[in-house]
Length: 90
Length: 87
Length: 134
Image (cartoon, rainbow over all chains, first blue to last red; front, side):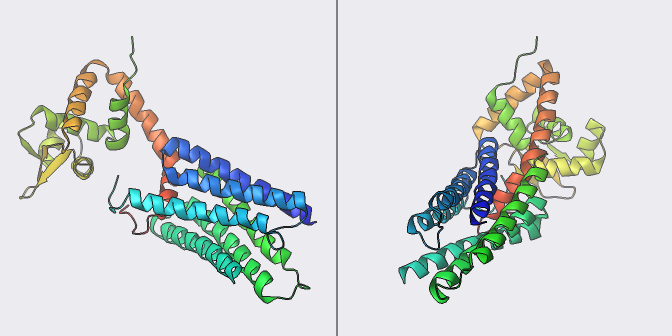
């Protein structure tokens, strides 16, 4: 059952990553690239869990991917705020 | 100890995203943000329960489903929102 | 023989001119660049209702293409802040005379694209910590 769940999570993370890739291409806003990377890393995290039979609770390498995913989000948000400091319309 | 800090940081990050998206939904009313908020709520629950699982509960207790089901539900509604928002 | 609009014109249209009212108003004000126009003036010249004109002029002002002048009645003047913009609008005016259909086609395509990307943009805007005026 766990393998099924990991598989679901891997796909369910991959699909938003692909959407974010498209949003990045059409809007040229780098934030979407960071989100695509983040959700992509989460997908890889679940994939590795399935391959190894154990997830972030027991396996540090798997947890590392999740950490990197959230670091990517943090970096993306900080980058966006630095780019667009003034709260004005485009 | 370091590990606990890391899990807390992940939970705070995803929680922060959920909060920002909720705020954004409140001011704009865009449906995508509604679903995205719940996605990050699910991920936050995952991170919080991970923290609990690793730091607080004995190794006999496995909180696997308490972590993964909220994450799966959150990601699923995000997909739903992304599809329906992209006319 | 339709020539495709170049990148600068397409960008000007996508980023700053959202409706036909705005386009007509902008070109009208540009034709008499030193002159200030009030909402009723423009509405009369373009034969459009005043509320549409008022909205269009406000939006163009917010995008720094026009300058608003206080007074009663409120008036607007063609005064783009950047010199590049001035040049681009001049070219747009020339193109509008010769390739009106192409410009209209591009604006329709832009409207569709804007609808499609507004959800994404709202998502991205949510992550501005200090918020953005809608």
